[in-house]
Image 1 (spheres, rainbow, N blue to C red):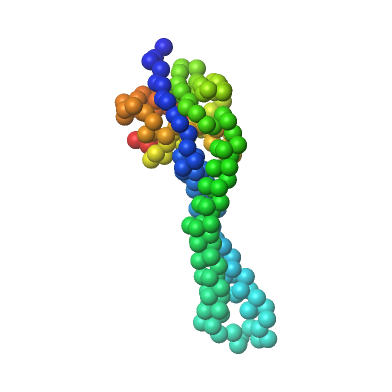
Image 2 (image 1 turned 120 degrees about the horizontal axis):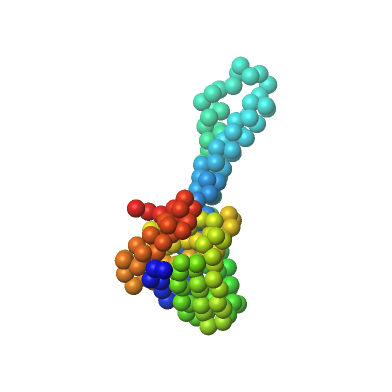
Length: 187
């Protein structure tokens, strides 16, 4: 029986958004969607220009590239701006609404890393997630994120909530011993 590490947490909208963004950036499609969208538009315009041409031999390759590149760059810029401007606003709005409507999320939690799992106790709730229920634990620069399924993080703990780096290291050792290859930690 090792010494349990306890952390007091006040979940916040900004912390939750940061974890959601980290999770989404793990997806290839989300991370490279600007390039993927631009490439698809480029190919669609190139195919349309070739299909509309009367004679394939008369196609100006430079013109084809230019007339396909212009709309693809424009669409890629729009997608990029949506990611940088619209998405953060929508995410903050959605998470803020969730926090306001969920009494459980308002208040302090005591999160304990125990031999049997992670125990989370709040004013209105208490739960224990056994290590066997955690399919993956990931360490980001700012958080420890625990997945109880493949689609979404089940629990996260901001590293700033720990009292010391020694406590973070103790939890990481526990994760390596209990989760083994399911723990994706930074060295």
